[in-house]
Length: 371
Ligand code: SAM
Image: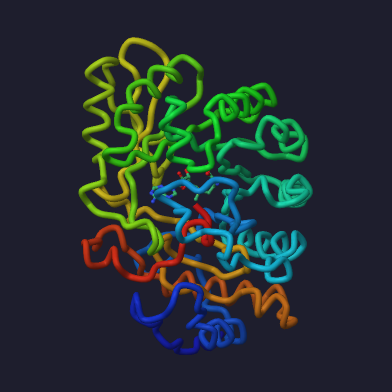
C-alpha cells in the first residue's frame, strides 16, 4: 500500500506578493511523495477538468479594467523570454494534466496571438487527441491568423469585444484600436470554421452599459454567442469597486426588454456562463456573473502561468512553481504527483467570500495568470 505524506497547508491569502511561489517546498515534497490513490478531486469534490495556459504576459491592448497604462507602461517588467515555458515544456506539462483528467485546454494571456509561432504550439497540443482546444484573443491579429490556427488543430475561439461603438471601444482598449478590425477577425474565424465563436464583453458601469443591447442585437442572428461578463476584482491594479459592477440580472433585463429571453439549461455541469435563448428567434447569449452569483462550487479550472506556475484560482496570491520541477529533471510521474497533490488540497472559493476588503488583496494580475 502506498504511504501518503502529510503536506503542509498553504499560506493564507494575501500573505505573499503577487509573483511569489511560496509553496515551493510543498511542490517538491508532493513530487517526491508516493501517489494518493483514487480520482483527482479537490477538498470540495471538484474534479480537475480545465486547464488555462497563459503563453505570454504581454498584450497589444491596454484595456482600462485589465492592464491600465499607468501601471503597464514602457517600464513595466514583463517576463524575459528565457523565463517563459517553451512550447515543448508547455506540451509536456499539458499532457501530464490530461493524464490527471483535463479535457479542455484554453490558450490565453496577455494576448496569446503575440506569442511567435503559436500555431506550432497548437499543433503540438492538438496531437494529444481528444481535447477541446480553444483560445481567447482580443482579435487584433485574428484576421491574419485564423486559418493557420484552424489548420494547426484549434477547435474554437473566444474573442473579447467590449463595445461596437468605435469611440467607446477605442477608449476601453486605450490603444485606439478600431472595432472594424476585430469584426474582421471574427469573420475570418467564422470562415475558417472556428465555431461556435464566443464574443466576450466585460461590462463596467459608466463605461459601456450603453453597448449591451446593440451588442446583443448585432450578433443575435450570426450564430456567435455573446457573453456578458461582470467586471471583476482580478489583480490589484484596476481599482475595482463593487459600484462599477453591472449585475448579470440587470444585463438580462436590459436585453429582454427589447428581445425577449428565456432561460436555457447549461450545456454541461460547471458551465461558467448562464445561458439565455431568444424567445422569438434562434440564437443565445450568456452572462458570467462571477461577482453577483459566484460559481466557485463548480470551478474545475487550473491555470498555468506564462512562467510555469500553477494557480488553482483566478484570484490567487501565489502559485506553485512547476517550472522548477520541469527544469530540475523531475520525471513525468513526479510532475503528475505534484499536480494531483496540489489539486487535492485545493479549497479556493474566493468569489463566495469577496468583499470590498478582499478586493484589496495583492492578487496576481490577469494578464500574467491568463484570463
Ligand atoms: N488578450 C486576450 C483577450 O483579450 O481576450 C486574453 C486575455 S484577457 C485577460 C481574457 C479575458 O479577460 C478578456 O475577455 C477580458 O476582457 C477579460 N477580463 C480582463 N480583466 C477583467 C476584469 N477585471 N473583469 C472581467 N473580465 C476581465
